[in-house]
Length: 133
Image 1 (cartoon, rainbow, N blue to C red):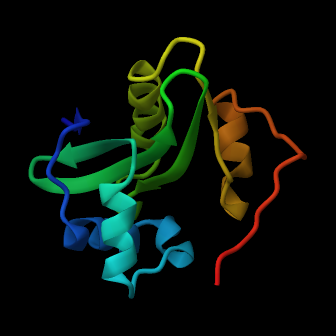
Image 2 (cartoon, rainbow, N blue to C red):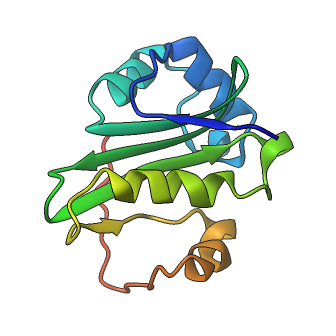
């Protein structure tokens, strides 16, 4: 299967929401709020997408300074395309676009803890969240 990875794709809110619906990440994102999704897309520092022909099948959405730290806010892969290495490759593509010393941090979905440890991520018990309204 030929998957293309891009960091300059013109991503619409509708395409992003559709992908999140087709992934397990959609359960934890505001799919009914296109206004929030527009901000998520427009304000990300780095967005790497995966495409099978014209179909968006994966996304890695990152907030970063490109030198010290990158927060991988979203890693979503279409359920029909999971277990093909697309998520791993999206992380590799993201890392290639960051400075060599830049670390990647993330909050893992409950079912993804084992996945990230296989990719070399280390757990950190010092994470904190202050939720918005």
